[in-house]
Length: 150
Image 1 (cartoon, rainbow, N blue to C red):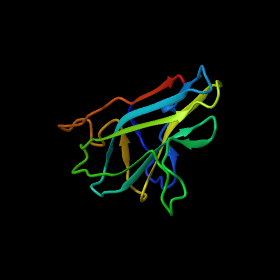
Image 2 (image 1 turned 90 degrees about the vertical axis):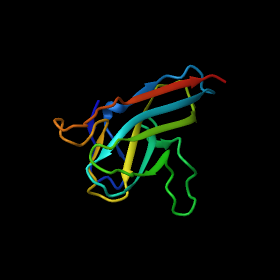
Image 3 (image 1 turned 45 degrees about the vertical axis):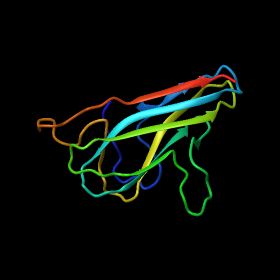
Image 4 (image 1 turned 180 degrees about the vertical axis):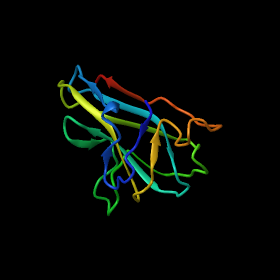
């Protein structure tokens, strides 16, 4: 589903509740493989740094991120600087992480993001250009959670 993302998200924000996925692990010792893929497009040719991360809605915390507390570095699943030429350019985002299942209770996960500076309108899974232009596009969002048994 195409989503117009929040534009001034300098703190981590859920892209949309429609992108949530839930799993009930069968074994507390399992690992969970989280995989999300989507495309983004911005309405600007400014090159802003973006952070993306998986977030455990049930446990209220980031998961599958880099090491915290390494100087002032932010723990993210993916960090990237956009390199777009115009409002049609797609930037593929691929998030992947392996995390412990911890329990057999249902868990809900989502994708959060933030941008280096505000005022960077971002379209998720479709081009920001008007639909009647030559090269507009739409793309799917996929979020797969696979349980890896011990």
